[in-house]
Image (cartoon, rainbow, N blue to C red; front, top):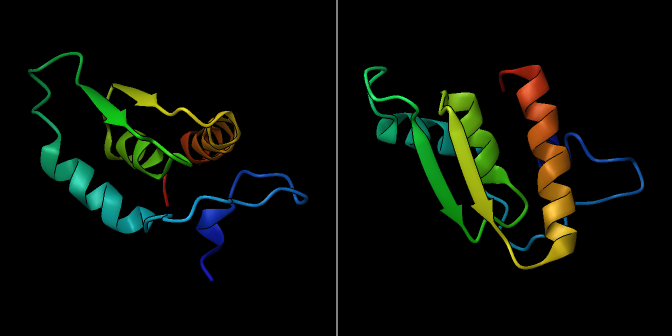
Length: 92
């Protein structure tokens, strides 16, 4: 079990998303898509953002702006907590 799935969540909470992806892999993929610094701001849209793995990975990879779209409010809360944790930490 990877602790990065629940990083940033309160002890009583759990990540209920059915398809949490590995952050290390997603950071690698986000870096492959990252435009050069001459493109500013570097923005990306994450539709169906679920529990925020892709959003957190894009932030860790260096994207300037990340917009996530998710219909489930419970997953939005999980995504906010996870992204805040990883953004404050700044690395995996």
